[in-house]
Length: 420
Image (cartoon, rainbow, N blue to C red; front, side):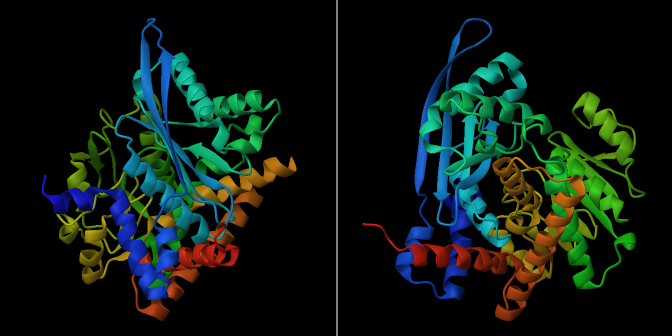
């Protein structure tokens, strides 16, 4: 593979490139930049697990803590066959900046297990989860590192996670993990949080640009929790959802998709195939549609130097982590695309995860309305702070968001000093 392409597709290199730009604009001292570029702790565990047929598979798991300068590490656990250390490092660093952008008192962490959860039985998935928790027990906890769900994991996995941690601790510790079922201390509004945050950022972007939501169209890449909830939330403010996709391809209807029907279909079939409400497109074609808003809510690097020039959307709201490569940033900037970066656009999830952690620590729980009102205030204020930073420094929204987050982490790191 071309080294330049390989570098572009490396999410940690993309994070470093943007960090360096933000640090340069902030005038950070070199020693501090060295600290911010480096993950505090990286854990790799090998996990022998007995499968249903009696065979033993040895799974590999990771947990990376990028920074705990502002509080416990915070970040999801990804179960997928393509999980690797570089990806987990990048995701952990993005969590550091994301938490700082919305100003919640967490640092950044991320975890992953190399497995295919969709080909495993419930019992196998539970055994993998519990073995993974046991492997990283000494490095996590309510005051150290608080995991959450991500690709391939859900509330049930978090319930097993919390139970395993609590059993080993000989204590009931619901704040050891977020994204749990409501009955185990989960927060109302958590499932909708990331998609609702995407909608709020899109709404604020339209307001900033003087565009009417009821005259706008959106294409959403992805139809999982983030993609589907984003689409429903965007439709709720009058935006017409004309395209959605899954890993197999996309569905397009210029008159708007039947989201209620599509959601029911997905709940049964778990894929778009077979739904009759539109024309089939490839994921590549979806990204290049002539729409007002594009929401990449699937995976990393889907918009890169090879296709960025073909993007026709006026606004990109990044529901996924790292969907735009660093090399694509300049191409989109030159085209005048208004990008709401991932560390702001999808921060609704970690904001409500923070609310869940707070509620668990207090053993006092809020109504959904209270959760949504608090989240909206944080997201709207963070959007305004990012745009203000962009305008003051003449930078893109992405670099402005990095500057906002990096500056806050740098300040706490500087004030705490270096322990020797």
